[in-house]
Length: 212
Image (cartoon, rainbow, N blue to C red; front, side, top):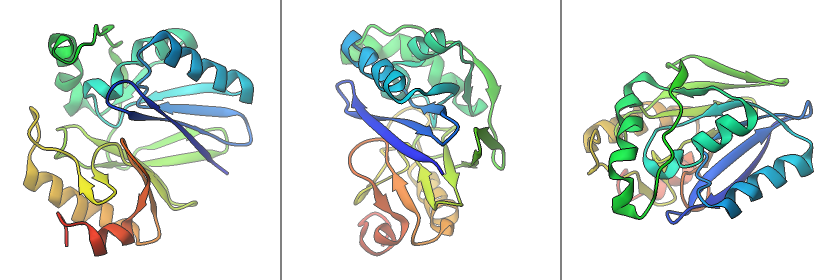
């Protein structure tokens, strides 16, 4: 059974996720740890739980979700896995980071590209990959059908949706991704968001002003 833990890191209060099961293997998704304090908090948690990181994953590559990529990759000797269509998004972070007050460590290049219907395996667990562009051109989410949850990055939020005014964003594409992919998961699926509290597919179908 997968346990989901997360930390709100950096000035954007981005949710960094650690998923682990009874084998103690874990995956780190969207590491936003920027300061030395945040990096140490991540390490301390992993050590306190006796976890073994085996995967470094990005739902997408906007700056707030990749600030810790380099640190995590070097600390745990992990390759980066993203969707190929977000490679340009990843490369752009070093160019605009200073506008947000960040000195960005260049992220490692991906060692593997993930596509729709791929399966990410760790320990006794697996996550299915869905391609859901709109917020970013190569945005993916990670779904656990057995436990009915999704690590959804910045696609869907509690009462809101991801912004689409950044390079590569497209509002109608995002709406289509949510309605044709996310909403097909089922009303009882829990949605772990890239910022703020978790929600559910059913709640957003009924209450999200961008989607009702």
